[in-house]
Amino acid sequence: MTNTLIFVDLASDDPDAAGRFYAEVFGWENDARPRGEYHRMVPGGFFKKSDGTDSEIGNLHLGIFKAANARPHPEPAGVEPRGLSTEGRKPRIWVLIGDDDSADRILGAAAGLGAELLWRDHYWAEFNGYNHAFRDPWGNEIVLWGKAGASPEIPESFTRE
Image (cartoon, rainbow, N blue to C red; front, side):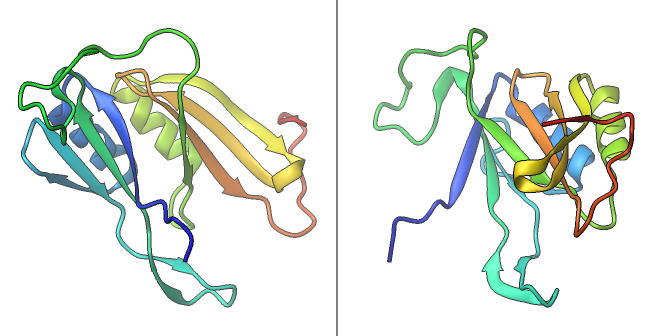
């Protein structure tokens, strides 16, 4: 068996507020463990098989850790750096838009909670998908992905590559 990706963490100076943000924007369960220090965001459900039924593989979870004292760590008081990264590129999180949701609703909810819209309405032919992006109030970039399907009709207003 190869090494398995099980979690991705985002830094926040307020994990409790970040947990509420992601719960409202995406409808994920906000599992505070412990509240204000580390929050596990649980989308629920399972990855789908090609026939649309659930596989036995559960969806990945997202962690939110407190930048001032990233847990777990052998030093109880944590170590430097203790602030959020503000310069240069950092990892991005990609979220597949659910069949029962929309980019417009997600982007509107995120912006209403203080996120910055980075772009919207872009088609990427290489992976046949529509994408949009925002930066959360803690500086993390989230890319939304929408499946374009077979023989997609790309709206005239969309940018493309």
